[in-house]
Image (cartoon, rainbow, N blue to C red; front, side, top):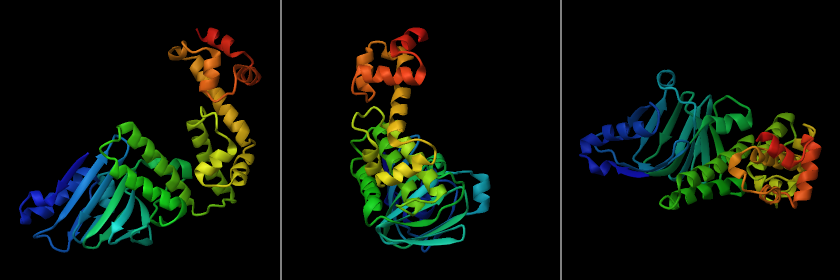
Length: 311
């Protein structure tokens, strides 16, 4: 984490200082200042190898990333822009979104864009790896969408970003990444633009998010189809429809992920100190007998036999 301000340099040096400063955080862009003889701005940056969250404030400025910049300094990652005060205007791929507090925009640095910032604007900008957006949504195209963060799922996203900033001195890298992963998942849901997905493409997006969530929480003994739907902001019926189109159910998916988890642990010497009963409880099963029955049906051998065979 680091904090920087133009107040640390002479007035006539501040515009160039800002250009270099932002250039260290983001990819190559052009900067157009309303006043470049005494520009004011400040940033607070949190980052790991995966994500970066910057809370910034500055005078009026326009950022432009051109085709030349995209070619010379490739960057496929997305940025989520969320004004806290003032406004931003995003233009990309023929779309324009005016962002004010409680609205956000998702923009890719893999395509040209323009961002106009009015004087005194304070905002968050979160860098999100491209794979966290493209893979769940099965897309490879620019986004410049006004996202409503005033209610529902959007409000949760805004609250989580505020929490990341407020707790910046307390969070480990792993914790920062874990929360950022969740924000990325929720943004995918918002980007779909329909909380009642019925079209095949939307159902595929729901299925991908459900599978990812179940895999991440398979060891939770309280994991069910209903709890998964509730956590992701959909109804149980919507989750069932998404999985039904690929021939499975929430119950079957959860059982399959738990069995996969047990198999991996049986084949890993780091878990040799755990009995089959311990593994059952640590992997979400109610008992060793429930695990053994399901495991033998799925893999044709008992958990103990698989452990011995792997040795």
